[in-house]
Length: 183
Length: 205
Image (cartoon, rainbow over the protein chains, first blue to last red):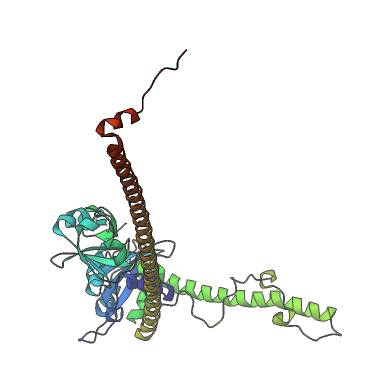
C-alpha cells in the first residue's frame, strides 16, 4: 500500500471531476482533525481516512484485501477505471443527474443503457458525453454513466433512443462479485 | 529499535520465508551486509562513469591543446544519445530514488485545484459549443420554415390565379353563348337551333 504519485493523483481526480462538481470536499479536513487520503494497493485506489490508512500499514501488502472505499482500478496503460464501489462518493457531489422511472430501474440494474422512455427527469444544461449519476425516482443512486445526448437534443429524441450510456450499476455487486475487489 | 528492525525485515522478507527467530536474525544480518554492498557498488559505479568520461576529455585536450584547455560536455554540444553513458542510466545525485508520492495536503490541494479548473474549462467550452450549435440549428430551422411558408404561399397564389383565370374565361364564354342563343331564338325560333348541331355524314362517291 502506498500513496499515489503526482501523475496517478491527477488521473484519478480527472476521472472523478467528470462526475463530481466539488472535489475539494473530498480532501477537506474532518471535525476530529482527521482527513481522507488516497492509497494504492494491487493497482486499486482506495479512499480512506488517514488514521485507518496508518493502522493498515501493519498488514502486509499481500494480505491486505481492501481498506476504506475502493474507488477503482489503475489500468496497465496508466488510465483509471471507476468501480461501482465509488458510487456513494460520486453521488454525494454529483454534477449531473438522471432520474429513471420504476420501469427503467430494473433494465438499468441488469446492465443496459438508459433510454428516453425510462427517464423521469434530468438535470438541465447537461452537455453530451458528460458523466452523470443515475438515480431512482426515490433519489436512490443506482449507478453512473455518460450522457449520449445533450439535454436539448435528448428532448427531440424518440422514446427508444439512448440517453445515457451505462458505466457502472449496482447490479455489478452481484454480477462481478468475484472480480470487483480482487483479481 | 523497532523501526530499524522492520526495515531489516523488509529486506529479509523476499529472501527467507519460513525461517524462525534465528533465521530472522541471520537474514537481518545479511540484509545489513547487502545494504552496505549495495552502497559500495553504487559508489564504485559512479567513479567508474567518471573515469570513463574523463579520459575522453584529456584526449581531446591533447588534440586541441592550442585552441582550448578543457571542453566540458555541454560546450562540446555532443548529442546526448551519443555519450558513453546513456541518458537514462545516469541518475542525478542527491535526489530521492523512486517515485515521488503526493500525500501532503498542500500538493494534493494544488493538483485538485488544477484538475478542477481544467475540467470546468472543458465543460464550459463544451456547453458553449453546444449552445452555439443549438442556436445555429434553431436559426436554420426558422429559415427552413420561412422558406416552406413562402413556397406554400406562392403555390396558393398560383392556384388562386389559375382559379380566377378559369372563372373569367368561363364567365365570358357563357355570356357570348347566351347572347348568340337569344339572337338565334329571336330570328328563327327554338327549332332553328337544330341545324346548328354537328353532324357526321359520309362523303358522296
